[in-house]
Image (cartoon, rainbow, N blue to C red; front, side, top):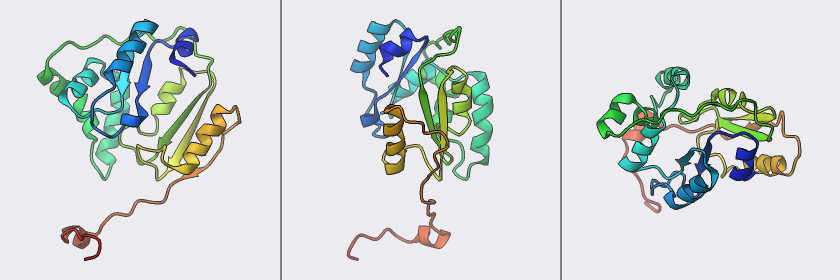
Length: 201
């Protein structure tokens, strides 16, 4: 679905994720974000490529709602990884230190959006934890949520995830699909203390 069509169906905000920049920390694709923002007339949130203080300032200008923070913050305290840096980057104290003004959240759509939408979340994702889809799904009358067991934040490289996305975009029903990654392997304390080995050594 195009952003223009989403707006015509009632979307009050677009999250534009530059997949090719996601995880690179090379910065947002500001040119495409600007062009889409100018054409649509609704707020456009840049995503994918954050890594500079400017990118964090953009995050601060459109902070998560208090409801979302109340849902996400306790998850970080239970995670073996601790809270995500992304959570600190949206913290009021951090944002105040960067300066600038906070945006006022746009009003929610008056009615649900009829466009079909697919939410895929990894149960080990510290950036977009399981449960975010429940909050967002309230805005859509035709949503499907799938959870990837042992899945982290970057799920598109997974062949099974890509297959589900292709099936969904082709109009096939993907409800109830089971998605599972291999469990992560963590080093023991003794292994972690060893100097890194190069191949062939």
